[in-house]
Length: 248
Image 1 (spheres, helix red, strand yellow):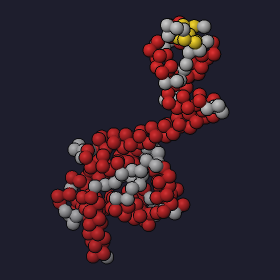
Image 2 (cartoon, helix red, strand yellow):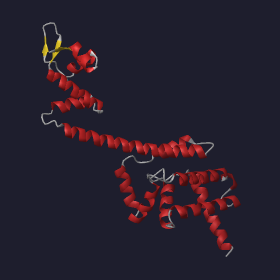
Image 3 (tube, helix red, strand yellow):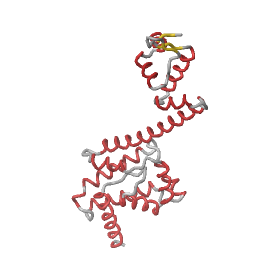
């Protein structure tokens, strides 16, 4: 039998922790003497190390208590479950990394960042992947989804993202000149060329995404331009095509 002090020293945990484990029923000592001193058996030591292992894996004490109370408790199933949790956490971190990459790109390309609008934009992105899948299947064909999936990797499309943000910044700097100005028509022409390249000449898909941006539909992997830019570019493109028709 081992005293609580000896067990604490052997297991590198505090006596206070062992008292708490006893209080919540997680690790009960095999024996308590008349003075209330706790004593632990070899079986108790094995159980404690088991508890500490599960704790190190990230399980809360309440969950560990449930595991140990279950007569059908299976360590293999528990470890498999924890692995799935870790994989889900990794995926969440990857999505967070993508958002941070986009934020960094915006900060790098814009001198005056509208943080309030920016964070509102990011808050509209659905975190639930199943929701994204439903939305994509609702709005896009399988072929269109394949094109859109090219934008899923921030490493692959970082330069493209910078180009878009740089162009959007130029548009913002020229908003005061009006959509019928020479500068606006030049920007509209560049915008359309970039759209054509981005969507591989699929004008219908480009229009769908543009409409979703205008309607503020919740979706992922598309930068949601603010309303001023959307309105300006829409009008500038119309003026551009009007000029083209007049010159024919």
